[in-house]
Length: 255
Image 1 (cartoon, rainbow, N blue to C red):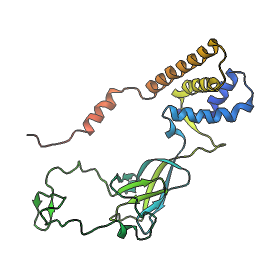
Image 2 (tube, one colour):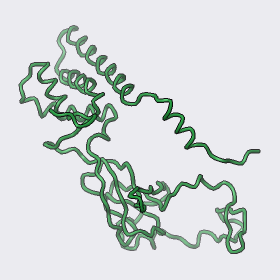
Image 3 (cartoon, rainbow, N blue to C red):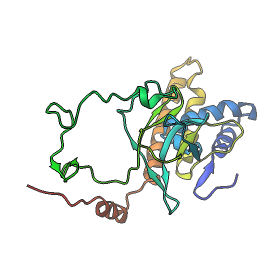
Image 4 (cartoon, rainbow, N blue to C red):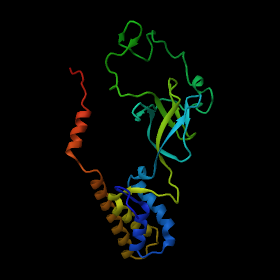
């Protein structure tokens, strides 16, 4: 099968193992499911299939997740360069009444505190002339344009009540479907074949110590191939480390 840039089809690994083990193709579907289990085991679930969609916002400041959603990789809005500006994950957003049309009204309590009361849970240290603000202690200033939280039970994205956009961009890992083509980095070819070689016999009843040692040997080969795959896929590059150091330097106040 043809290589796609630096990626290879998962089917190539499956058929390679079928040829090596001299198996018939009727075992393909069993090995197909084992291959996807191996991708998850190796942390390669992000290589299933990445989709990017534009979701309209519901009146109650929620957005519906697609039916094949597994895990998000990026949630945000677009800028004038075609880039996705990320939203900030806010674990404090409640999932209470998130399916109700009046979700915002049901999740607000304006009687909790007043900014001018001595017992307010919010502390500001500077009066700018028309409002209280924090002069110091503010986060780094990343361009977050809203807050979100994922409610996997109800398959929706929760947004803060001040979200002003009519849509949200979602990049996510789609659930695998039989019959579609999936790719993995070529560096993990040997690791995935080793995983199939190991898992194909692990559930077979063991009758002798020779069979047991064979399972252990295949397990050892898999973990060694996985280690080599990760080392080849993400090699250390001094220039990238230097660029990362420059981008993450911050001007801060020191005592």
